[in-house]
Image (cartoon, rainbow, N blue to C red; front, side):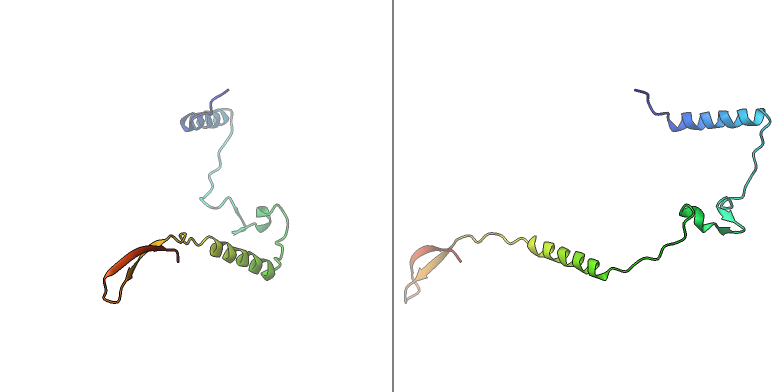
Length: 106
């Protein structure tokens, strides 16, 4: 299994190939930054979509509403409520004295 070349190795290889190209009589043309993607001073729109014109999009509000409704149902279901646990209730007599303690599930 071969290791991927490091960035430094890739840079060195590119620099070597450029120097080899220049030494064999090739020339490098300098272009202003950002000018390479322009045609007559503007971006060539069809180059971004491989030659096809821009397509109109069809609005689908029914589908979006259905998706939103499903999201709301999921969030309502996932709301956590702890299980009901029994708790202690104290029974008092008419004079406020404790008679007994009982466990109540409510």
